[in-house]
Image 1 (cartoon, rainbow over the protein chains, first blue to last red):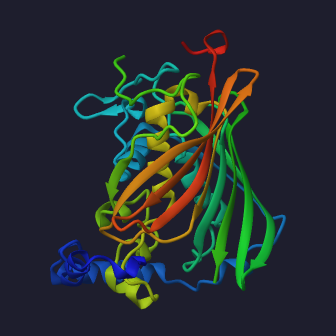
Image 2 (cartoon, each protein chain N blue to C red):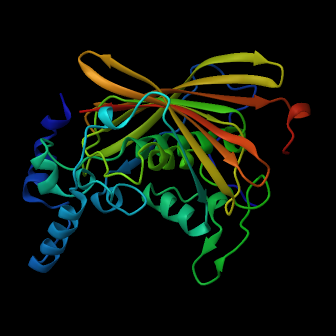
Length: 187
Length: 150
């Protein structure tokens, strides 16, 4: 059975839109305007990237960014909490001392570096694979530098893939704390 | 601090041991939140997703990777943050409102200088058993004398 052949009750719920965000006409219009703003002159990712392209950006892992990431996947481990309602910013506690960032948080933000953020986003690309090394914990509040390099473009079963290698440096000590190889399927 | 994790993997843990499953619903409001999928309407807007050929909005694959890492932290604790490896393939999209269960089984236990290197087969699947993400996790659990964080 595939995802499109879900059990009848689930399919019925989806058809009726029970899980869809409720919207008034004004909200629908606001959504339409937002989506149109995203639809710039996109190119397939394959054509936007050349092997050897290197991009790099710094990211401050603020307490607020970390809890927004963790809330999105409903991971409420207190080790990641350096922001608490009513108190706001706190040092937090983890086995390494103060609060640390979730293990794969940096994997998520590599996407924002490998896609050149100064160019229109390449809608239609699909992340298909990652091989990540969690080398050492990173503390909440650290600023990291994410470096990506396009290392390969290949075709597999008539599909086009772009492979990147990424390294994340903790600027407080200059050490590499996270490393990843990842593939993007391009239109 | 009081830890609220599951049973910890130790040198006594055998091959074949199953990590405790966790479950998540692919809630469209979370899929489209700002730090996750807001940048791409395929992750949160039904009409847009249908216009690109999808049956419904789909999660970013990284959300299932995050689920897998949550399960691993439950059982490997602090060791998961030091020299571990997570390799995942996104083999099927997770569609809005699906309930995803996350699974892991220890498939290898290797003796290494620091202690034991555990290899865990991990996967995420929906309510009817369609696999969405499959992968392998490797974590080193040190012996007490090699454990720098006690």
